[in-house]
Length: 84
Image (tube, rainbow, N blue to C red; front, side, top):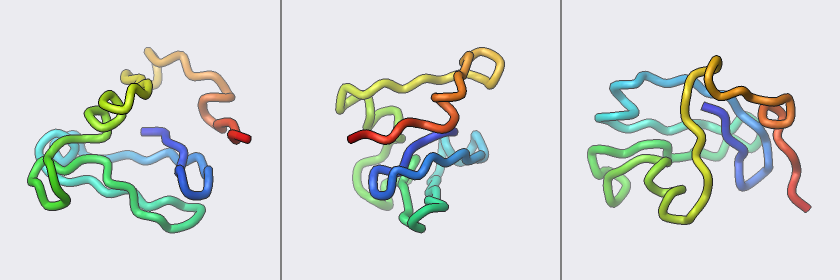
């Protein structure tokens, strides 16, 4: 997974267990500010169960899924861009 922290704008690459993402809880720690990001909670420990894809879709934000071969990532995708 590649994401940008909304707190400090650090771009991060994280891996996770598919079973945890689909059936359990996944929390990712930002390497820039040490903020914890809830990626998936299918046990309902942190409120309504779901994952980051559900949350972003509800906000109308884009989620791109696939493997490293199918995503056709650009350098800008990997390093991210700072919003002004």
